[in-house]
Length: 119
Image 1 (cartoon, rainbow, N blue to C red):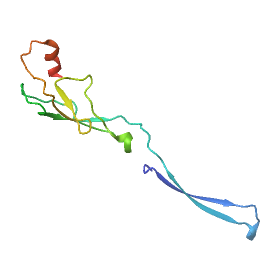
Image 2: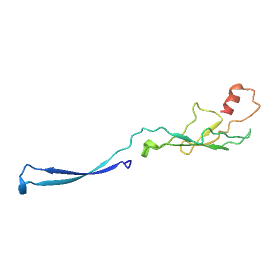
Image 3: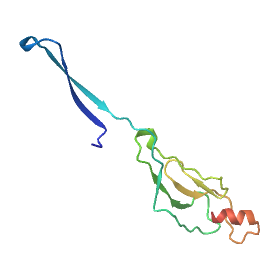
Image 4: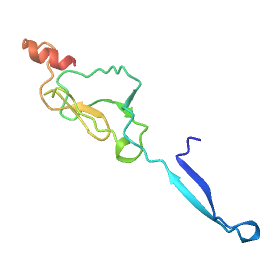
């Protein structure tokens, strides 16, 4: 069973003979506790989004979703952008990606900025 809970009936018998023998019965409840043995799995990956250049700060770009089947805190997913990108922010709880307010200029001549805008 995958339920994670088991009920055992345990019997103890003493050394008495015949009708002098005594028996005790106990119920044992066992709960199998979760460990952090699963990695978050992305839903609908790869993600593709378009954003208009010169978009104002906090313009919604896309929401991403990862799920972790572990229980409790072990299954809580926290999002981040790595390495940090000056053009986009992500809500660490919801996975919503928005523009940061830095100017998104498609014709930028700064090669580093141009690359970061596309990621």
